[in-house]
Length: 310
Image 1: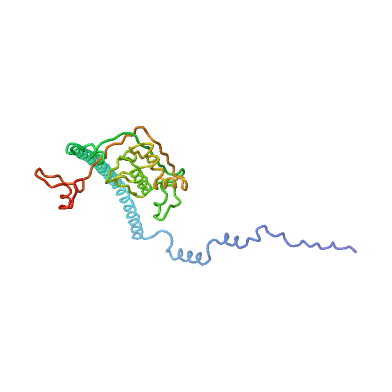
Image 2: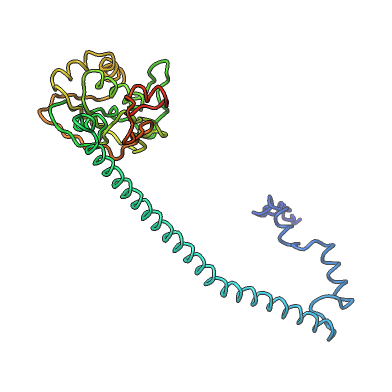
């Protein structure tokens, strides 16, 4: 009796490599949703898909395309035409600014020239009508250049100080800044006058009894002229005695405290000869010229008019 061969089980087919990506495969195989596909097929069946079929619809589409092209062409043409106009207007504006700036610079030079002429005439008039005390009056008013023995005091900001730093020192004391302030220069100048200086100048700017030392932001102004550090103060007087008297004064001690506490750099030396220029302009506020027949003494004229003859 023959035996039948055993039945071998073929087993399950091997799994597909992309079996775990069934969702992705479904999206790829059916990129268009069934609803959209059905709607598209129905529209094609009804003759509503694709390009317009009637002549009127085609003419409307062509007219729309022509209109859009015309709008784009006109816009581009206007942009090309207006570009040179804008560039021309811009250049004209730049030229006007340059011309006005040049005119302002010229006016400033004219003002400075006239101011110098007025100051020179004032100095000459002061020398001519000063009588026996012409030289003394010219010296005290800063109307004439002077030279002689004196001191040279250089004051500079602390090392590494940013020129755009904080505000001025508070009136109650020092702050953590190493910058020289206007009130520091005021005390220095007043200390030199008190110590016996006969004439003082800062960075070539001659000081008079009407000079003002102020601050404008971070800058120090002397008679409205901005100065930059280091500040070189020249004072005419007995050099060694003036130097000693200033350093022993309260203002000299104030400057020494700035040096010790905030690193402000100072250097003072007695000089055999220092030269100071004349004041750039003289301003007379209360003086009045005396008439030819005036017989009143100065003191009485002051009492009657309330004005002196300085």
